[in-house]
Image 1 (tube, one colour):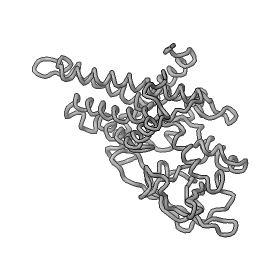
Image 2 (cartoon, rainbow, N blue to C red):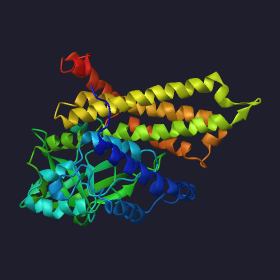
Image 3 (cartoon, helix red, strand yellow):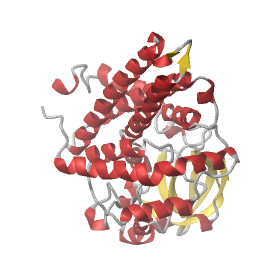
Image 4 (tube, helix red, strand yellow):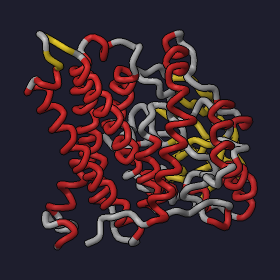
Length: 386
């Protein structure tokens, strides 16, 4: 068993680490200042500028196939890069990517939606969640009724990431009420759907989407009519390991901040780093970060090996969400009152990381998946060693 990185992996990882340190972290004080003033941390134009700066060094489309101008680095490399990007709370992502299900489009759809999205000229959003259909995606109520060569879509979607900025959406609606058939439609904003921002405790800005007799051409069906749920599951399962991967970087940075503060903050004549209570917080956090790192990398390795990685990804997602929240809570506690202020990014991360236990599969759904796989014999407690 060789746990070392290849020379290429190390070089790519180190470049991203340097990029984050030199280009992204220096922006953090200004981002916090703007957010305290109730303004967006970074404008889309500023994030785009960062993406183009990275593109100059060849970082474009980390997971995008080379035939579409991407790097196609693979899952393990993508996890390593997400961990580095996670060391800043600024939600930066390399450009040149598109939702994986857009690759299932026909030639016309690829020209209209996929390629412009990869190029950064268009923005998409994935719309399946509804007020009454979150974890239970099969409970969606949005409908699409056939009208000649068109479909008429009615319904509401909620907590849609990127829904306020997107100019088109991949929306899922029932097209066969008797059989429960669900179809995915590519719907341009100009066709009539509307979005409304949802205020949350973090800086993540989801949207509620409303479809009121929105007319969509039949040619805008993505995939096959009545088989949209399969596409939805491909989207949801495309890279669950990447969410806890980003949390690795956040937890590393947070723990480094906690250690530095513990070394300099004195109480009763001694640095708090000398207090056993603080030492145990640091030790527990370090162990959990290491465990999370290997859960994530193992799940990513399974993806690269074309193995069934669902169990491993659910474990990484569950553990990452729970432990990231415990770690940021400890670091805030180490900082005391200063950790609770909005002067430091600790409070910002505290709010942001809470989302990891909810979106793209709640803790409860991950536990359900893990337990069901074990009870039905689809997975073994022996794990990869069999």
